[in-house]
Amino acid sequence: MILIHQYLYRNIRMKNQQTDIIILGGGLTGLTLSYLLKNRDVDHLIIEARNRLGGRILTDYKDNQAPIEKGATWLGKKHSSLMGLLKELNINTFEQELGNTAIYEPISTSPHQVVQLPPNNDPSFRIKGGTYSIIKVLSGHVEPHRIILNQVATKIEDHDDILTITTQDTILSAKMVISTLPPNLLLSSIEFYPSLPDSINTLTRNTHTWMGESIKVGLRFTEPFWRKKDLSGTIFSNVGPIPEMYDHSDSEDSSYALKGFLNGSYFSISREKRKSMVLDQLSKYFGEEVYQYNSYEEMVWRNERYTYSDYDAHILPHQNNGHPMFQEWFLNGKLIIGGSETASEYPGYMEGAVRSAISIYDRITNTSI
Ligand SMILES: Cc1cc2nc3c(=O)[nH]c(=O)nc-3n(C[C@H](O)[C@H](O)[C@H](O)COP(=O)(O)OP(=O)(O)OC[C@H]3O[C@@H](n4cnc5c(N)ncnc54)[C@H](O)[C@@H]3O)c2cc1C
Image 1 (spheres, helix red, strand yellow):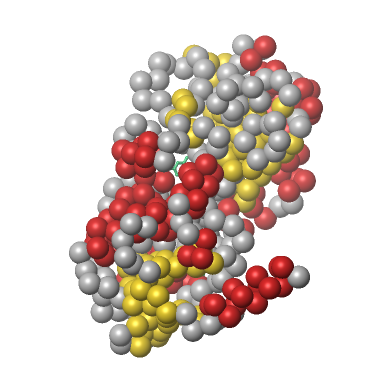
Image 2: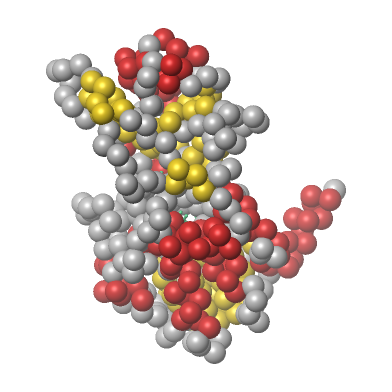
């Protein structure tokens, strides 16, 4: 009964709702922007297509087991805006363990080898408690009524003084819309009336969505058995299907996992087939103990319709990421195309998402909305 009431309430509240700003997408960019806006007198809503926040940040949690990152995982010291935000939110990081050795498999005709790794002077870091911690803490700062899940924006119309956004349930209006969707997805999944200029249409349709084609795989274990064999868990293979993998145990080193990438071309085969390929490759290096995994996790991002969309032409990694045209305003100052891929520095990464949010915040707070 309470659920029905909440559903009706939400839908009545949403009908013809008008606000200053609509932020499309509740990933790191959208949530950081909303967090920054919280002390300003600017009414805003986040419209999110999925039934969850975080977008390309997604951590799989299981009780008393290592969190597995299905999306964004690593950051570096140079990621100063992200590091600054984590500090402000009291979220800690820990160093990614690479070990002194790695399994290296250069070609299929030769066996794999164990190679020494040089000292790592620029380590990568992970977020304690899982990358999703940042999404949890940020969303905790956003008033609940500002976040609307399960609403897929399909149309944006310019009515001179306002923009309207159509979703499957309602039409919302705002003085300004800020998209944080990957640019290619924005133009391939949302209709604009009138159309955006050809120049930005072409640019967005040819902007790579970072990691959009990737497949993440992770396995949890009761013991880090690889360490007993003097192996670090780090794997580099030109043979695959796993090209790289790392020890993914938790920050306290009390629950254990391995996690890496699977060659993205395996997106169309079954999960069972992918799992069997992963276990075959790992058992070649580590022996039968890999079959004693506690859980197998994977995420095929190419099959995620709120992240990936096919391109019109062949596209290179990071193509057009950070293009200067993304700093312009569209629809007479009522539309900003944001999101990690549009950031001037570190586009595609979490750092780019935070920088995009900060730069949009600076731009809109110098404007009368
Ligand atoms: C497998 C993988 C590994 C990665 N590894 C790293 C890493 O190690 N380090 C790093 O820095 N970065 C990494 N990244 C990149 C990082 O995840 C992104 O840069 C960052 O999360 C982007 O945030 P964003 O908010 O700009 O976009 P997104 O996270 O893509 O958010 C966009 C949001 O828009 C929503 N949406 C889509 N369509 C609609 C619609 N029509 N209506 C309403 N909402 C919609 C989506 O559901 C999503 O929540 C990785 C990404 C992936 C996928």
